[in-house]
Image 1 (cartoon, rainbow, N blue to C red):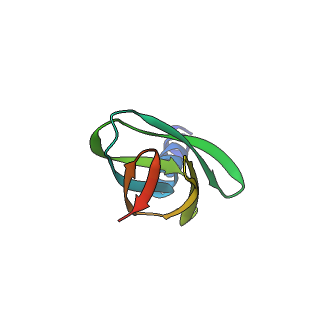
Image 2: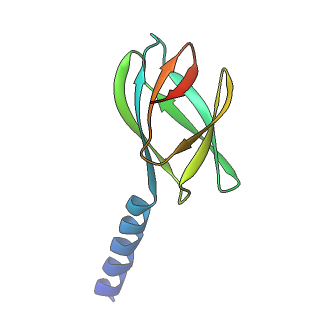
Length: 92
């Protein structure tokens, strides 16, 4: 029984990791942003740290998400590289 439970937990972990959507970003602004993300009919929040280069993950199985910015909604694909300036996203 312990092995079955362990295998189930390992499977869930691998599934969660495999479904992570990653965005590499460069935030040129000196403020942190928390933006709304829509994917597969649900919404969640994503944070971009101030004045830094980094990566963020979104838990979804979608290949594309929409992020709400100060300049409107932007479609971003998995693995995209973006820059943020004045609260707006530009895909590199």
